[in-house]
Image (cartoon, rainbow, N blue to C red; front, side, top):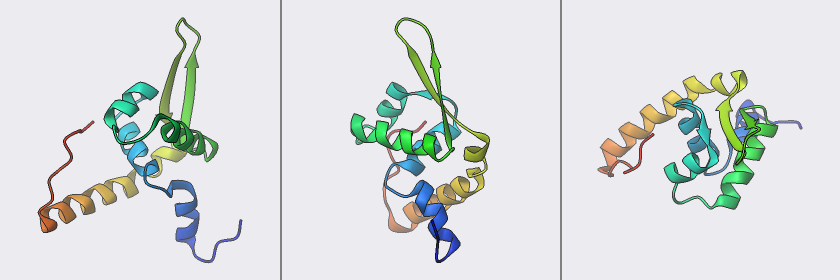
Length: 111
């Protein structure tokens, strides 16, 4: 795909409401799908699955299946996903300042 400016390439990978949130949670450690769902109560299961698949296809997230009963699936950041950490950190810092400036409450759920 051809991009007019480089930021389009970034948004192509992390665009949407939930992908950055998922990456922020995975930045804190590997998570099972149910853990991510609990941390993000406003996302539907269908949307969570879709966003995880897209992040996996883009190489940001690794899906590991443990052969046991019941099967266990764990998501983690890839090296490529970890390369996004400085941007995540900057977004979090900006968000904290924005919350302070606008008097918003911090989210009740933290990872």
